[in-house]
Image (cartoon, rainbow, N blue to C red):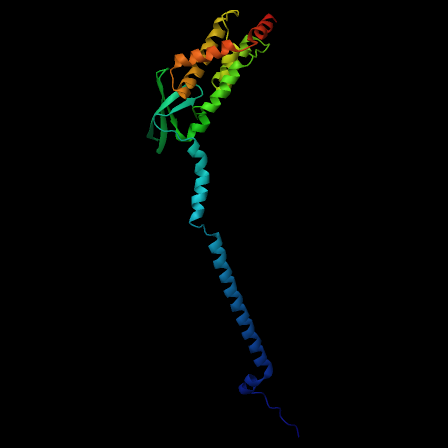
Length: 245
């Protein structure tokens, strides 16, 4: 007789060792996955804390960005040097609305030229506006004036352009070089009209800055500069050889 095989019931399936083992494995994997998730979340929180800017961070970054700007800040009644106009005085910081934007501008007065210039604060570096030189820098300027004049052996028209570029550069050292090279003592040959014009322009521009630094007037500054130029040695010989060629 053939015996009919008994099919496993639902209870038998639950009791099967394979199924229970699989359940245990799945529980372990679920636990490991959940623990991994928790560790990932913790790591994220730690990384977010590290990445989030601290209270001191924006202060440091802002000071780094603002530190170069602070060097260019001018105050009312302060003297500054504008390359193409020379020494001027800051009257005030003015706010104006231009093209829908509010701009802060320095109002600079040039008393000698009887003119006023408005320069946006953001354009100070671009326009070459700088503070008046210090007393230590003035010593270097007087040393330049005591040196020998250096006159290039080129056409006057080209030299005149070079002198004008130096005068309008805003660099006080280049300005002093022009004064030194174009100065003529009483014992030297007379200058041409154009040479004399350039010399007077450079001398006045330099004398204004010297007067501000030494807190004196322009006339006394000119007298001091020309005394230094007259007392310098070796000027006559070099100028005569350059002009004879």
